[in-house]
Amino acid sequence: MTALLVAAGAAIGAPLRYLTDRLIQSKHDGVFPWGTFGVNLTGSALLGFLVTLPADHTFTALAGTGFCGALTTYSTFSYETLRLAEDGARLAAAANVVVSIAGGLGAGACGMLLARAIGG
Image (cartoon, rainbow, N blue to C red):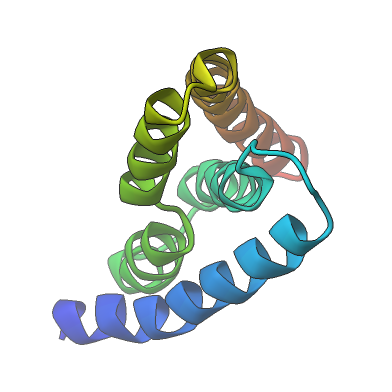
């Protein structure tokens, strides 16, 4: 049953990630992967929020592991960072690593703080 909940959440999160990534990236001309950065920060904040709320295992599997797991993407982050470095945009590659990791941790912490503030 848990695997089905994870799959159901992922079935929503994965297409949403793709569509959101493409929408954000279409608004920017530069080499920086703003779409992936945006979905990863959003997913980190949401996951921080969700895991702080009192919830049962089924909700966590659906929304946390399934939805947030599919919404965020470490593999695309890695690929885009390597592509930037190989294409000679080493500063953008380094910036992507630093701001993505620091931003993801910060977004997760903000999500947790928000959940605690509203009674989670």
